[in-house]
Length: 453
Ligand code: UDP
Ligand code: UDP
Image 1 (tube, rainbow, N blue to C red):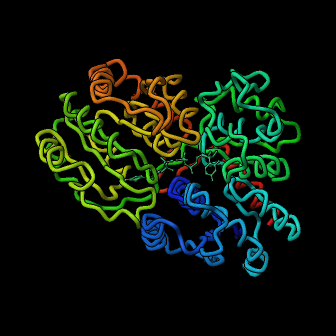
Image 2 (image 1 turned 90 degrees about the horizontal axis):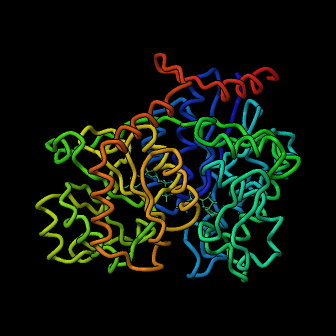
């Protein structure tokens, strides 16, 4: 039986698709090991890992013990998750003995994109094929792998990022740290890892040919960068396990009536913006389920809801909504019949989940790859994006503006139907049979891994 190991990095946005991929692979005749960097930064990651390994006892866990966090190279201005990725990177020399001790010897390692530059030399030395899993969109991949070619140019003076044969990416969509003169973790991370991707054996992306055909064709046609290995669209990866939780409030709401509001696992809005958002949700007149976050890292989130959004708003929202300040399993919510719309920051996983369940999206990108993802929301008919709202924290978006857009989303029957047709696309090409879900591209890859072992 061929042995495949997976190496995710930091944050739910990176861990979740790795777990989904691992779950899919177990349905085939493969032995699977997941190497989990330890400790995790967020509590959500450690909890999900616990549930995952209890649900899939056949998948082995190997912990990669990280160097002490007090060796953190990041400073307080950097995103704590980027700092954590940096600690994983600096601990990656420990992988060499771990990888060679695995039995039977690995047929392949699947590595998170953020660790490409540190792990590819190790797997090359050990002669283990290394596939990179890019956990964002194919369009983001076009920027990621070509950014290093322009890293010395004054990007701020450009109007757009040009990639041959593709629509230019407007400057305003590019993650702001990439446009800064000074070095920062994101810039170094994209420059270094993007450059080394050509040395991997293949790049997996949780996307579909039918939604990102142009980007995939450019990547595989050598238009973006020469010498790139195959870019394989393996998605959309289906949810892999159910964390039971009570959604009693949602169960009592009419079908399709609720707007679900969440900005992912690591985005905390300013208190002022949260107030306006609460005001906007109330003004819209729609029912809503709103997950509030006050800190990027959940372990630090120790305030009560009233402290964060105020007593008055906490009381008034009860009329029409449910507001929580703790982790809710998003798949359970998006699959619930009462949910009719999603106000989302457009993290790639959130969008793939919205596509999978056919829920229309009001895009409100906050940082990173999210504007690039938001543009896809409009392009494929999944929902709407008010691009004038800018990045998170750039301007305060007023309640009135938010209410108007919520109405535009929730009141539009055509958008609801379009989102349903995106779901059909998302699930097409997948044969659902018993417990095993087969995907063509992935099946081909599995064949490669098994035939040599
Ligand atoms: N998520 C969740 N509950 C929450 C917040 C997030 O289940 O309260 C999940 C969400 O379903 C997604 C992942 O965490 O799978 C977040 O990844 P995404 O790429 O959407 O955004 P990020 O958190 O990385 O910004
Ligand atoms: N990203 C990055 N460096 C990091 C983390 C993220 O460049 O250390 C970029 C990367 O291009 C990736 C995107 O941000 O495609 C999404 O990252 P992530 O899932 O961590 O969440 P987000 O920042 O979008 O919430």
